[in-house]
Image 1 (cartoon, rainbow, N blue to C red):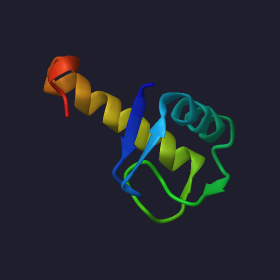
Image 2 (tube, rainbow, N blue to C red):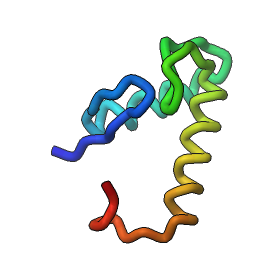
Image 3 (cartoon, rainbow, N blue to C red):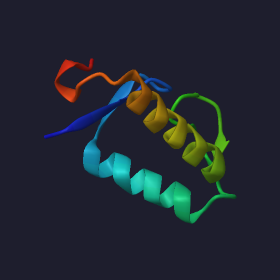
Image 4 (cartoon, rainbow, N blue to C red):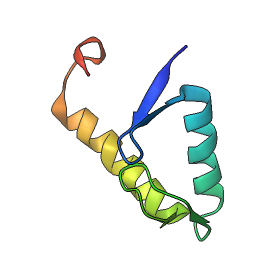
Length: 70
């Protein structure tokens, strides 16, 4: 099973749960969630989507092969 580590809460979630949460945040940009992807405090869906985009851009710009990532 593939998993994603959320540094905001120092927990690991399944890829399925992660994708479902991202879709929920995208569908509800003004809703407030318990925490974001990179912060432990409450965030809106819009904030979470920004964090997701920034994380994606960071991984692209690092140019580290997937197999070598931690």
